[in-house]
Image 1: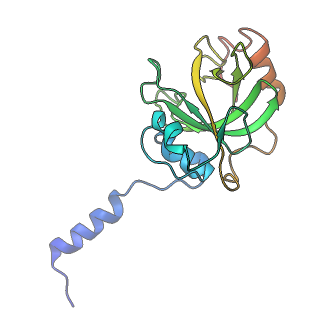
Image 2: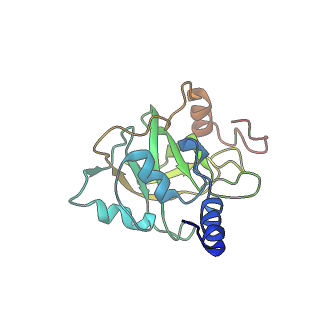
Length: 189
């Protein structure tokens, strides 16, 4: 059966206009929500700021981090749509590593995935309600404090690529406890 020329052109256009699929979790470029969903297995949709309320009665929630859980950032002026990220490592009581997308800029553009990024609990009650997050542009935590709702616990195992084989624990501790340690340096991570 011979297809009309227009149908052939349309078929090729569909095949070649699809965005390239990520080869691995870390090749992802896009918003934080689809990334967190894929990395954690938590099937919540909609803007990041809605995840905490949507998780109620569907997933366990709490204020203690666990590897594979999703940290749900509150909606605030610096994050009008909120933010979600997956806990990839526990470094110590007040320092974690996150794997997430659409936070730092790479070559001037947002959306890229980052693995094992330092997050520091700066809440006065040590309850993870306020944090600072490593930002590539400043090569450190910076001064912005972000409000957090808490952690949404995934029902299964997180994606295999949420953490590196040898994450930089020492660097994470330096980021958290040595003020301005990375400021002004070229991002080497």
